Length: 112
Length: 113
Image (cartoon, rainbow over all chains, first blue to last red; front, side, top):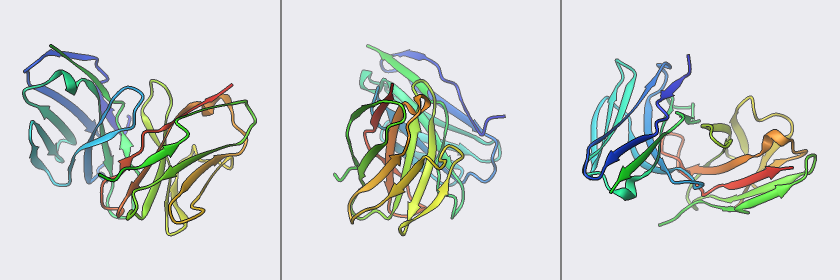
């Protein structure tokens, strides 16, 4: 079983729709959860960062973590064509475990 | 807004040659990382570096790889004898602490022929 599983897509939705992106993980040591956005041939850009279970909101983006189910989500409201990118979930462990473990990324296209 | 920068943006080299990839992390950051992404695959951790020494390295980071912080601003990744399978996008990242998020540079695309 892979440490982090993420549906690679591609996912296409119409402009204005709510997008739901998800990752599951198997390693209970993961304590920090991040979502990065990556445009083609560019570096990952940090979107959201959460530590505890629950929801965290930032503008049109909401990150959700359920540690009991080992499941994280990113919701995008009122999706825009500029949101078209690959979305990567990433995780890291507790203090002293610094590396990020990434999912494969979900390729998202918002159709105008 | 401060950002991580990387040079060169593209590098083409012959198999067996040495390459040095350069990074300038965000100025008040203390932790430095290299990741790579083979085309179509996920981003993979290579090495982390703190206080002038390697903190952690992956299985990928074998004796052909080395990292260095030669001065107060640069952070380099050296591949001594490149192989075809080293062709990938290499990302440098930095963070202010090991508990804080990592910020990534734009990457260097390495092609080994």
